[in-house]
Length: 272
Image 1 (cartoon, rainbow, N blue to C red):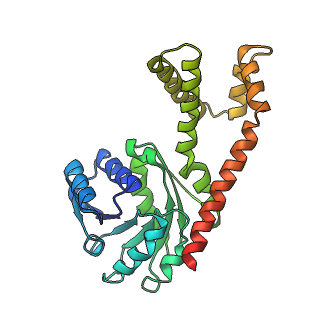
Image 2 (cartoon, rainbow, N blue to C red):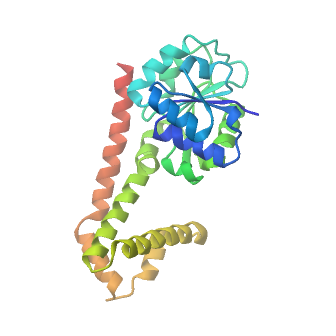
């Protein structure tokens, strides 16, 4: 069985661990590195896994997942320098740190060490994550296959070239926050229209879930399905006109562009 070390016990690291355990991964095959004692104890108790230092977790692991904030990657690389890493076998680095290019790792790791950059999102906690892979210079198909196998247990996986990863971060990496914001706004609007908060919440959540499932299963584009719901001069048409006047499309374009640019800035700042 593949031994996986998750370096970082924050939200994305926890989501990965929880998703892997939920998918049937044995706790003995997972180890987490977490700096803060209280958080380490919390993770160990919640998931029944070993929580230790970065160097100890990485020693002998087949897949070393870097799940820390971009600003903490330098310290992770320093600690990994104390480990006898072996890129000639299946051992590899998987980076979930937003904005950090594979070249940043390759410059500090043993020559030819394989690195795969990944952007995942928090729905992996319930097995519905979206993970996007971008291989570094030395990652081979066998490495990609291994990472796909690991991450497919917590959601869907696609592969892109690394130059597209900042855009991926903007769309799916940060995407759940946009979705939750829309849900939040619709619930508040429902309450303002006289519904109780529990009823408004149930209406919105099920509508979102059903609509996403319909979009996924139908094979139709979102614009086609939206048009099918929008009867001429009807209630939906009245609502859509207001949204269009409020420049919702432009707001999303600007928001995702800002997220893309911030991801690129994070990568550039770590190179300096």
